[in-house]
Amino acid sequence: MSLHYDHADVIIVGGGMVGLALACALKDSGLHIVILERGEPPVRKSLGRDCRVSAIVMGNVKILQGLGVWKYLEADAGPMRSMRIWDNQEQGGIRFDASEIKQEALGYLIENSATQLAMHKTLLESDTVEFCSPAEISTVNWLEDKVEVKLADGRQLSTPLIVGADGGRSWIREQAGIGVWQRDYKQKGIVATVRPEHPHRGIAYQRFLPTGPLAMLPMSDNLCSIVWSAENSEAERLMAMDDERFLAALNATFGPVLGRITEAGERAAFPLIGRLTKHFVRERVVLIGDAAHCIHPLAGLGVNLGLRDAMVLAQEIVDARRFDEDWGELPVLNRYMKQRLPDVLSIMASMESFHQIFTSTIPGMKEVRGLGMRVMGNSGGIKQLLMRNSTGISLPVPKQIS
Image (cartoon, rainbow, N blue to C red; front, side):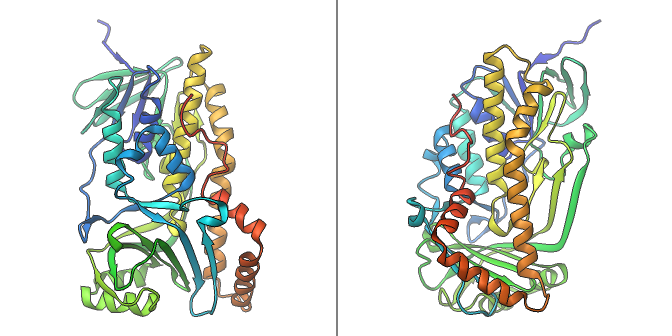
């Protein structure tokens, strides 16, 4: 007796921001998309806001507009109109202003759960996307012309392409036998929502310390999200403090730029691990987002890479269908990989360089950092090019699927 398999044109494993973005990009393509999500962890709140936030750069805001997602987000998104970076106790620093590249903002700070909710609302406009949660995969079997997926509830699916969008510890990556290069920074990132005494005026602050960077990112309602990266022992010490002592430590470390930080909400901490998969694609499988690459969060760019992955992959799938190609085969998937590798590798390399430069204790490095920031601050052309690249507005990534 032959088993019955439901056909899906694309199966996306993982219902986080990147997997949902891919589904949103394909929702009007006429393809049957199935998203399999094991179950979202509960949202950790801090002063009533999601602890986990992302700085969505301006180029990716344009992507969210093209996907029809932004209309659900713009009312609560906190604009980052400028960014100020300085080095520990040193005078001066560097400032990036959106006006220098003729943009209204460098990006927007948005709670991860709000972005996912907005994407779910967008997907409700389509009857070709099926969201299954909780959905546990029991087996996945790669054949020459398809992938067969069996779920724990007995349902069976077949598809020409399975997409791993299931995060840094990707199960799909493991099942496909794809290895990763990994770098443990031996740090944790502490996240929380805080309330400063003075208005932040849409300015993001980043202070580099010998133990790691402290970012103060502007949210709506004059709240800020902190991402405080610290070596494991220091992070554990900070997490063990009561609210009053933590607030005192935060004020002492950040300084009086926004007056006193008057309130800090519940804290969460997560280990900082850099990962790069050894293969983005194999026959009938592609990895996107954190399943393919995890970077140090010092610039909050991780999810931005994933959103760009989703858009480029969606366009390749739609183009392949238009020309009667099998979008699960390597010629199509390699086109995706060749477009994404330069962006991913350049961002990963620059984040690693920043990390090394600002945590280095080599004699004379402090002076080199200071000189570098002064040169960067005074070189309009180089600074603008860096800003255009880091905000993603000059990258050849589709803003909507054609």
